[in-house]
Length: 272
Image 1 (cartoon, helix red, strand yellow):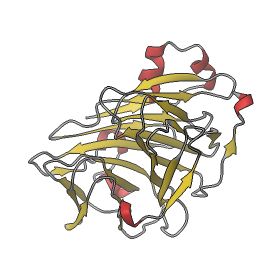
Image 2: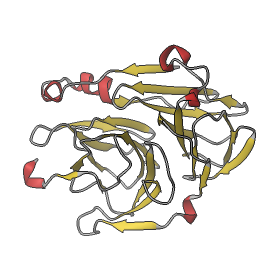
Image 3: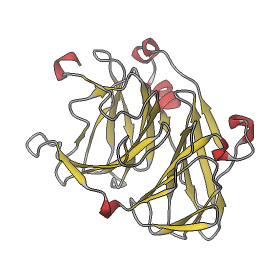
Image 4: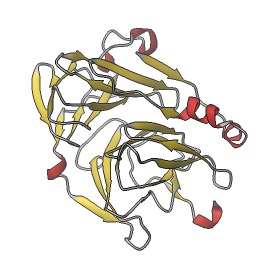
């Protein structure tokens, strides 16, 4: 239930077929009832996954053949966001209730399981050289930061769950951005994270709507057409930006050399 994705060259994106772009960067079919699915990317060695318990209890797999450990979090830390209805995450036997878009940070060394008939858990794990406490991150309790403009169709609210301040982590950062009704653009203007890989999961998108996600080096961008609950891997050399056919939310997660949220390079629109 885990795929492996290898790192790619920026130049390969310029001439890639649409099928090649989807194979290398698009993460599909993470959410299957009664199963745990994941992708391991060699870009900053992140694991991107989905767990949909249904009426079962699902354990977070070790995937020993890929991660080389007997327990998934033996050398990793974990971020979880529930993209479905209310469910529970069990961390070393302690039960945490997560509603829609609630998050949970789990420190290195823990055992994790998922329950909830209508829950759908998105998770990202990253390498960790230290252990920090498990912390519940209730969406309604996180201060939202308004960004963008209605006239630019980019009005949105940024909810920072783990971002290098307040909650200490080893390398993992993640949070949720919710677009206002009538807005469609995210991360505008775009930017680069030269020292971190970033992954987006698009959620709360109508089934007949799509997001056009842009990737590649400035001046040589391509796009992927994405539907609800699909993720995209953005290597450090790639911009990340997108526009939807309706409003939506997205979960962003990063890992790399540091947890400095402002360590990025803005890209002016004329550079595209």
